Length: 214
Ligand code: AP5
Ligand code: MG
Image (cartoon, rainbow, N blue to C red):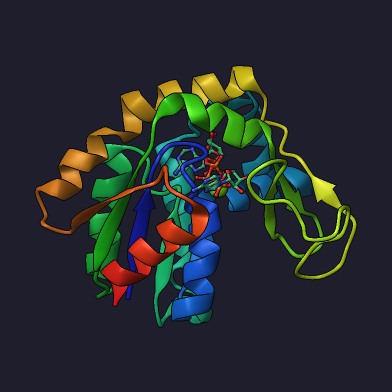
């Protein structure tokens, strides 16, 4: 099964993708994570993406389409993947259609996470991630059971993203509304779009998604 999670910054795409990975055995493909890894490695892709990401804009379609095209050829995703943060423009969605056709793969469902803008600022500015295992946290909504210790791996290495400040989040929201929101119509026309309420508690969002996927 191959699915897309569609939603603005802070909608909970990464949080839910990790849960669906565990429940369904699919592989999370986050273009944001891939680009951050490229920036950290100082690669050519990373150097092209760094400033655009820091400003809250979108990196070029060509660059992310290339990354996804290579990634979906890899062995570990042949039983299914969860696209998190891709596609983000109509051009990316059209390119994905072509790629999937060429590679004889199907898109099963697109889950739109419906959320309000204002609470997303709080979600994003309160976010941290375990630098050791990648588990996500929030200062208020998802604290570790023992302060300073990752629930999953026990490490004390909570990290914050360079683009998780209020100013950049506002730019990311503008980019979402202008360039990504048209994908709701795009996938609505294919009959593959399912919309869920992303404002409820994390566990309730997971339950709604697993219901769609079962
Ligand atoms: P990316 O990494 O994809 O960032 P994003 O889309 O801005 O989304 P986030 O990762 O910020 O949010 P999320 O929906 O994953 O939320 P999360 O689950 O963490 O992209 C970063 C940048 O890379 C882009 O700005 C762009 O420059 C570039 N880029 C990436 N892909 C690209 C592409 N295809 N084309 C061009 N450029 C691209 O949750 C957030 C917080 O809220 C967490 O703390 C979590 O614990 C909490 N939370 C989650 N759900 C709930 C809930 N239901 N209730 C309360 N709290 C919750
Ligand atoms: Mg994310």
